[in-house]
Length: 291
Image (cartoon, rainbow, N blue to C red; front, top):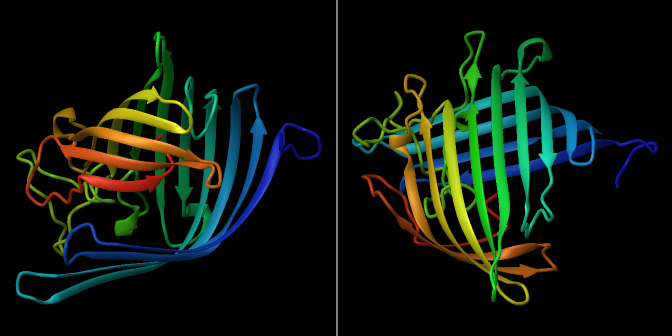
């Protein structure tokens, strides 16, 4: 156990410089360059529980661009200093972080940015997540049933404006499989894309994500699973509505590779309720796990 001073506690320091660049739709470009550091302290509360507190100080350069219907280039840019505190409670009893067969994981966090901490971003962001793995007895083959639920809410305060990259978007191999990264945005009750004042797809200040998996544990490093995913983001003037979930289903082959310390993933997904402006990929490749 990585204890500090022979007590059930840990101290961590991270320095980072990262670039994010993606296109959720043809002609729409989003990018973030960030650098900074994180200092964290964690304390074990028992066999499976722990509490941690981290302080994040970073510089963010967020940009997005698109061409409107008249062919004019629209660009928006936020250059922000971010200063935030994030306490996290974690209960973790899974038998493996990469290839679990039993146990559960529950997390609850609350990020507070700005205010007395300074910086340009002023928001609070509570998030929760719960996943559960249950072995299924069988004569010839080991099987596992897995479920996952995640939800979050972000809200600016003191009259500040959120950067577009702080709003919620879903989609990708760790979210609703098949949909491209951050290509699930807010839609109206008729399923049509909502746009902000500049003509970009509108992100949400709330999100809900549901995942269900049934695993078949084959011999050696192989695992095949069937899955069904659902998720949605909701704008500030919308309430959470399960009827608005974007849903996909399919199958996945995972091959655990020790050199990566995580499984290779080959994903086939089907869009269960195709809508206009969907950005969907039937075949995806990734490393890791959805939850």
